[in-house]
Length: 340
Image (cartoon, rainbow, N blue to C red; front, side, top):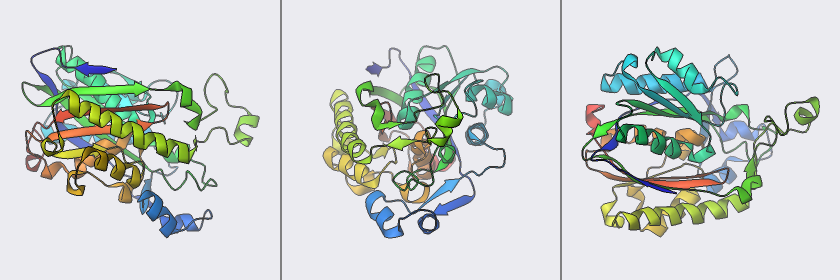
């Protein structure tokens, strides 16, 4: 599926925000938990540490609210001015009400409506495209798009193949209309045939919680790492090249690639296929690990001060479903100003 702006203006990111838990889980810590070591993790994934929210009653909605409030503060928008809240997550506080409802209440965004979107690691760019449609069609003036996941709640810390990868975090962006900058186009794909390569088997209506499902560790994330790696390398590179071609861009036109932070080797392979140098690639997986829907907005926060209005960005992700996609985004403000 591809989408292009039907109107004379685009949905532009006018502020970014984030939340990172204070607790750090390092590779050294994991050496004490499972049979692994720091060098093995670093050389195969690029990860040195990740953040963990803990078990003090805080969950995804808390992180999402903190990230959203930071973004609103940066651009001076009050919560009552927000029209729409879209939260991308696979770790909602509960199946319902939606995380967006909890965030709306936490913020005091009394005029907003919203919903959750589930696309695993592709969640943020799916949500960005979805939120953009409401801005572009004039159905909303201000939208919050949030990627937030408490992955530690569904990670099996006895499974060394997955527990080394994931961390907890949230990232948020404010969307408003702009005549020139904003999301120019996005291309998305799904492939349910390979759904078993990355999944959580229980917790839904097919396998509701029972003593048997808990004992069988069916409520934890499971991944077929080698197959997912191969597909991610192929699909992320292919969809990025598709977006470049559709928009008449080449490597020299791209200021930054903003990739989902799943594995440094996947990111390197994607950048190489696109003909990009390392200084054109946003990379922070070493500090945060894979935070699922939060990785792309976390990159935007980390590089915000370096971004200038008119910079051309390619955002891309690959995740369970299988889901993948990419978008061409023209940046709307000088990041040194802290928000448009």
